[in-house]
Image (cartoon, rainbow, N blue to C red; front, side):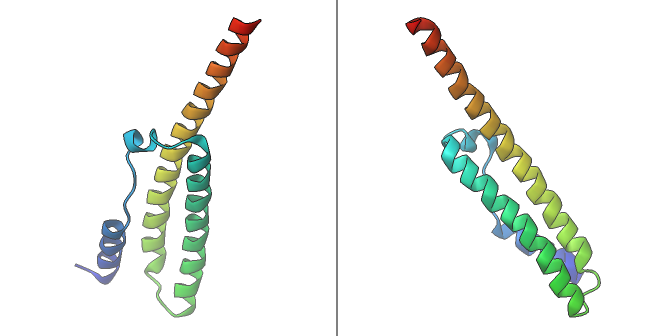
Amino acid sequence: MAKKEYFYEKWSSAVYTLSREELYYFGVLELSKLIISIEKAISCADDYRFLLLCFGEVDSSDIVDKIKKDLMGYLQRVKDVHRFKSNEIKRKENFLKGVNS
């Protein structure tokens, strides 16, 4: 296994991403914090790419691209659940407003 595939395998085995079903147990606030954390991790991946290029790791760009792609997919999954939970809260509020009026 090449060096860059080894590092990617090491990273992907060290990071645990929650499934869509597991994310439904979180509230809107926790999901918002998770979104901010993932966006920060994506930003750090770009910084990491720059740092590796400064030290002559030319193939590191491929690794960072794979990691960013995984993080972007996970970010989209969390945002989808966040959107669903937010809409669910709005539907409940509208239902209660309709009952009370």
